[in-house]
Image (tube, helix red, strand yellow):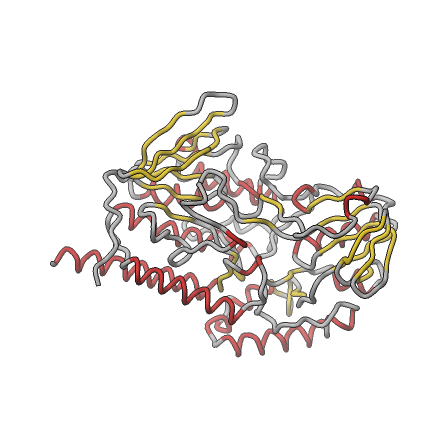
Length: 451
């Protein structure tokens, strides 16, 4: 089978974004001596983990802590300080990213306060138009482009909207815009969703609001941050994680049942899926607040009538604030729809990184792992560096498309049908997959040179 070579006339690379994935790509390329530019619309690195980021894309709230332990979140090339807690807060994570960038000498390679407004494929590579904030756009030519603009910044509101929502006299906001609980003090609050942000916000609201209701379309398995006295994901980083899925599922189900009982005991609906068949909801506090009666569980919203919200079971409630924790859209505003589409958050990429139809276009960090993104983005970046420098070679377009189709089939079989599961991966399995592909790409390159 003939390999798919990019045929780039230049190894010069453009990196879009200086969040956790963009700086991982920068480090991998810098280590190889590759000429690159990294553009960041904000004035600092860290992306989503920079609270109050002036790029307006951060969804971090004041009380945010990581949901994966630092041991599983850290980059292999630069571990986190051992004196950090198991679950650092956003300021500690942002400081870690600052240290990472300075340790590897990357800061001067990043052009801050500069937006990438257009990436256009041309015969020799890509024309990238950048615009300094308040300045004049400029177009530069690159052989390769690494897209690392994140996927937790473009809020997805309920579609279609709920009937009568426009008549609601109170405040409606998306979790993306939530920062502190002060606007909820003394209010009647409804939080929609059962993901990590929904649980965090509902727990915070329950401590200051007059009342807090948590509405959801379906049930979820609630995973605590600690099991048996250690961070839960440290258990999943044990040999258990290498076992077949049914073994992992059975052991995790047994542990959850043993340590906290059934979620239905706390008033949550029975999940319609097995554990590990949906992105986990991690919360150490939600079940306690439910057990204390500080949060009331509701089914999905049916409609609004003024300040009254009716639910699908016919019940209703009066509210002052509705917080939509309904996820995010995968968006690339600098790419035309005829280059890459993200309809329903689905992007057709080989190994979740390579666009088969546009040689030299790579996506780093466009995954939703059962675990942390950072080490996986680091692994992706290493593979991309191989491809950029010619050390690796891709398979044929037909082979890549077959892999994409197989991935999509596996997703449909494994995970609950949802826009949040279109880029889902298992942490350990995916890291091993990237390493296998990296070795295979090097073999293809070596074999092509023998011909």
